[in-house]
Length: 113
Length: 111
Image: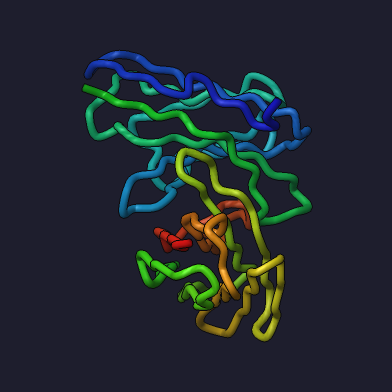
């Protein structure tokens, strides 16, 4: 089983729908992240959490919200999806002692029509 | 403003043809530079961390080096399985784990 699991792996939805992307990890890491990847723009940080009670906005948080349900679970929600949120979304984790060494999930491809 | 620029965007090499990928950065107070490999349809996979100018790290056919302004990822005698997108990243924001990624170099190694 993968250390960082994302569900769903692929999702097609319509404008205005609420979408939740889920992430769970077995690494035992405190730190979890949500990134978005677009062609030509690279990976951009949406939200990050350093522990269950700590949630922080990243570079591009508008239109997104997150929930850290437990140390191992971090969900990303799009309250009202729009087409420019079509992208590949990655969840990642890290240990606080290994700065910069992120462990990524396999991604969730979201298409908003 | 922190910036990371990678070049070239894409690189095609014959198997065995060595080359280098570049990552130039402008950050205030570098707290590490990180290289990742990303295969199509997969999440990035960590390769190296470099902290100070002059530092070098090696892994199989890959060697990463760091100067005060840029990092190079040298690929010696590449094989087709080295084909991937290589990303570099630097810490940005309030925490060292908030990484700012470059857009990557897509490497194709032709048998």
